[in-house]
Length: 88
Image (cartoon, rainbow, N blue to C red; front, side):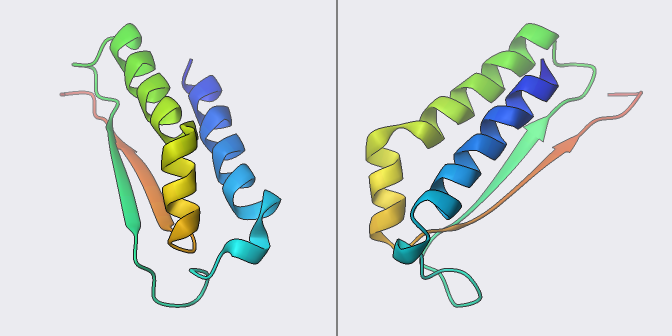
């Protein structure tokens, strides 16, 4: 399930940054929008909850209005990370 979510996120990033590269101004320059996705993948999160997190993020990022807003700003910087641990 996590592999599938990662694939969706990579597709989104590819669509934004490679399909319309002429519209992006953020690369290597100051940017008006930066997004950090912090994803809880600890043992306290059941697999169906994790899948819901991933699907929600992917749906939000692929939404036409969200994509249009991002592109209208010239793109965005985005980073994502997961955290987990055996004691969480």
